[in-house]
Image 1 (cartoon, rainbow, N blue to C red):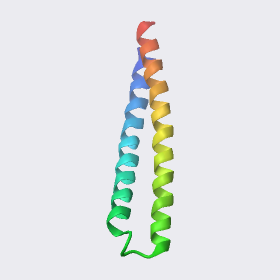
Image 2 (image 1 turned 90 degrees about the vertical axis):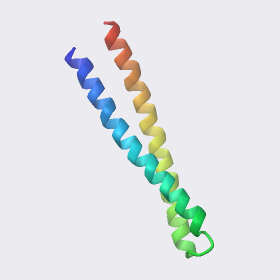
Image 3 (image 1 turned 30 degrees about the vertical axis):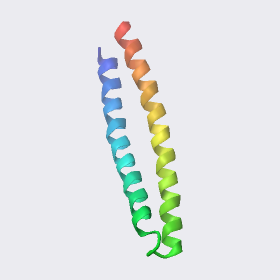
Image 4 (image 1 turned 90 degrees about the horizontal axis):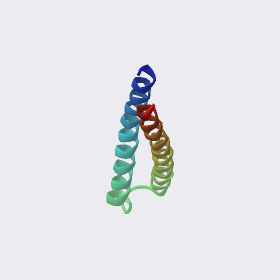
Length: 78
């Protein structure tokens, strides 16, 4: 049972950071959409670059969360 509790805590940790990453990604994309004609080009490029990075990080965290969920199901069966 302690292994299962540890896996659940690790999943909660990833869910927390996944939420932060997704919220930051959405905020950056929204900022780009509202300020693309007013902001300087370098700011748009930096924001687009970081939004791409946050999208990749969200993808990686999602894959890790799916792997953890499979481990939790396996640990529950045992």
